Image (tube, rainbow, N blue to C red; front, top):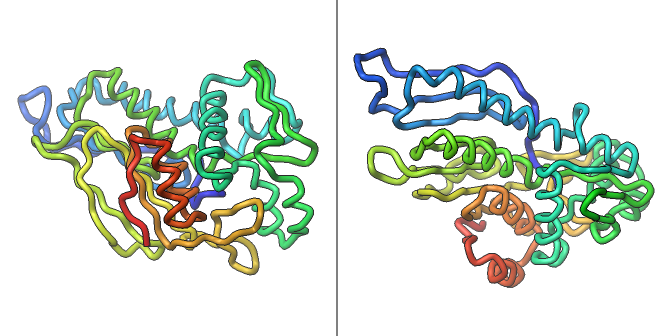
Length: 294
C-alpha cells in the first residue's frame, strides 16, 4: 500500500484578482504550490487581502510539520522509527495516524497495511520478495501510548493516508482562521462550504488523467486511488500493495468522507478488495461513501 505521491515541499505562489477598494474579493483567492509530491492548490472565498501573506506562511508551516512526521525521504519521525525500530513519545499526529491505521486494518480485513514498505523496496530494487513479505504484517507492530516498536526488519509507510491527513490539517487551519468557503487539493481533496452559494465541483480522473466523473462537495472530502498511476520496479508492479501479494482489482476507486484521511485510507484499501468486501468495510464507517469504482 503505497501512493503515487509523497511529501516534497517547494516554493508557493499566490494568485489574487486585481486590487479593488474592497478588503475582500468576490472571486476566490488561489494559492498554488507543491507539497506531498504533487501540485497543491487552495481556493479561498472571502479572504482578507491584508491577512493573506500570514495565512500562506501558516499553510507552509503546517505542511512542513506533516513532512517532519511522515516523510520517507528526509529526516522525520517515520524515518527514525524505520531506522531504529523504536519511536519514543510519538507526536499527536503520529499517534492519530497509528490509531487510524489500526482501525482501517481491521475494518478492511487487512487490505490497509502500512507495513508493506519492505515489499515496496524489494519491488523497486528487484530484491527478495519472499523475504520482504516475511517482514510485513501490521499486527506485529507494538503500539503503546508512549512508544511504537517494530519487529526486526520491519518498516512502515503512511503514503496511503498522509496526503489526506495533510488536507485535513490545512482544513483545520482554515476553520481556525474563520474561513468557511475553501477548496483544498493536497493530493486528496477537502471542501469547506462552497463557492458563490453552490457546492464545490471536483473531478475524478483515471490513471491516465482522463476525466471519469465529477462530484459536488460541501464540508466533505474526496480521495481517489489508481493503482496503475505509478508503477514500481523493473516489472512495473502496481504501487498499491498487500503483504500477501494480491493484486489490485480496480483501476480507479474514489471515496468521500467527512475527513480526507479516512477517505484516503479507504480508497487505497478498496483497490485490493472485492465489492462485497468494500460494502462490508463501508458498513463500519457510516460517514464514508463509495463515489466511483471501475
